[in-house]
Image 1 (spheres, rainbow, N blue to C red):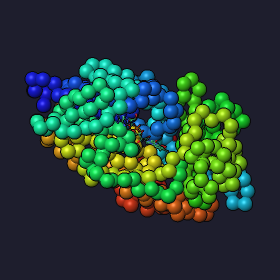
Image 2: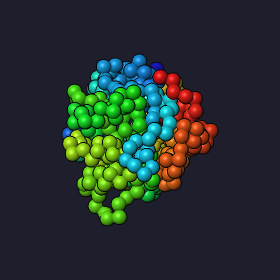
Image 3: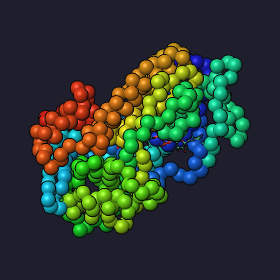
Length: 399
Ligand SMILES: Cc1cc2nc3c(=O)[nH]c(=O)nc-3n(C[C@H](O)[C@H](O)[C@H](O)COP(=O)(O)OP(=O)(O)OC[C@H]3O[C@@H](n4cnc5c(N)ncnc54)[C@H](O)[C@@H]3O)c2cc1C
């Protein structure tokens, strides 16, 4: 395709993680790229944590997708905790080698957006796409309030509620897991009375098990001050309406089940951000059919236990760049993309379900477990597959 006399034209719907990464991929492969982002506001203010594998981070920096100066908070160890039976103190169950690169969602987006702001990328903010169709010549037609434009490829990067997905997989709907996740981020300066917990988090990320769920805690960079990011998974409260104000219920949950120190952290009143989402997943049967291609959550959503939605979006972009460079036609490039990325997404959905069953729907008797039990239990969840968060349960801590 590099030999074509005019540059390939790619339209990207959605200018978030998947959309910006796809824009960088397209421009690096020599295409003219237009990104349509519905939101008129800057997207960088979400402030949540996003964990990615260190080798992927290195690859993205090395190949110019991410700025080497983007701050991260890498750690190499995972620590499993629970509440001491009959008490309120913390009990450590296990440690595993688990090198991860935690990022701040906003800084990650800003870095990708800067990459997509150079060269042949037009980024149109406040520009919702109202429809996508196919012209008689096989090219895609994107309609917005400013009119129609034609593209050789349209990337649907319009997130978990993607409308572009409906063109490739009509009627596909998310499968609810039946439980919720609460997310928050707290400036470390507000946690000065928790030196032990912060010391632990400077070298490790933490999973805290409780009956009916678990919480994940890790540090991420902030704008200046570092943040403690958390995600807590558990069953919904009996009374509805918690989505409107997620704070009080999750504090009660933590108060009931967490060791006192961790409950205090969750109950802290100065959260920078809190949100609550029902957990659900889905996967398209095929991630591309020329001239359409899906990337990021538009192509598939796994339960967040895999910490892989943004990872997948970034890998989608690397794959897109590779197939555009290697394949002779748009059709061949998108077929190869679909082969590779559909399988990767389906694997994550399956793994996310196994993790959700083990860590939320049917939690073990955490208090009865130690290192060997945690390692064995997680080997069972992996079921012979590999995942970057659980390199080799039982291999021991390397750093
Ligand atoms: C609790 C939790 C923890 C997570 N932790 C991790 C983690 O540690 N690691 C990880 O890799 N992933 C993680 N994820 C997943 C990750 O956050 C998402 O997979 C990722 O952010 C999705 O990015 P996206 O660009 O595909 O979608 P989105 O960020 O949803 O972006 C879609 C964009 O499309 C735009 N859009 C929609 N419709 C239109 C339209 N018609 N026209 C124009 N624009 C449109 C929207 O405005 C939006 O900006 C987590 C998710 C959750 C819920």
